[in-house]
Image 1 (cartoon, rainbow, N blue to C red):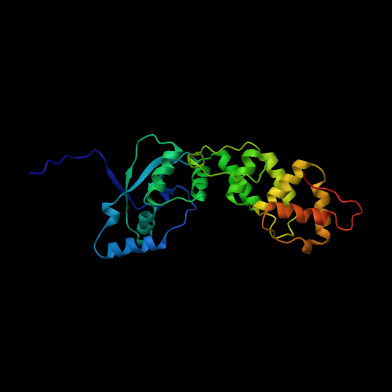
Image 2: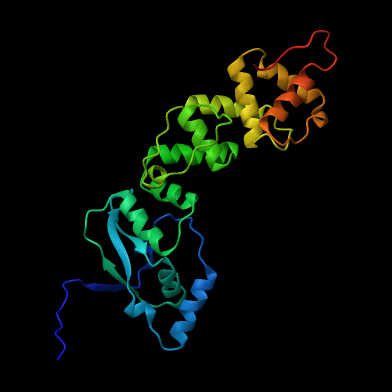
Length: 257
């Protein structure tokens, strides 16, 4: 005879979809997965009822309790689209943001943007600054992380995304310096590759050397922007910028050491 025990875990259900919040609110929905869940339901497999989603209760900015979805966002979307009740289990353990992200990402592999969305949603100011910086200047994530942590970007590589980033431990150390470098690069906005990592490295090295003003260099570029073309690496960009700066000059000026 089977020896069965009952569980103290309670499965709730609700049709009030507004009570639910998807952690990492801008995550893309996998339409293929949604279609498969709907097909299962049509075939009599009620995954919405027998596979409840996991949620935690967190207060929103107005102090109201909301159900934050840890696992099961696709089942939630299917329930909402079909007008079916959302079956859910409330996780009562005290979970930090990394634990929440880890549970959510185990089912569907998270992209870097998902971690940023998760931590900004819970008011982590470092990730909010990171998102604002990327939105303002359009740099890739690795370039943005490197600039915000060190204030410069060198040829030794960009910021390597590690568990610290995923755990919500990324810390902005050099926001003002990062903005300074970004604004110097933006002086070349007529150049389509001004956000390119190698171009940013070149501008950073020119700034570090301090032999010429980046504003003066940009002024010469803006007179003939067509003469600056995409290059294979930062050294090539440095050579191209030095050639541009010294065009028609009587005495050649070195831009970097």
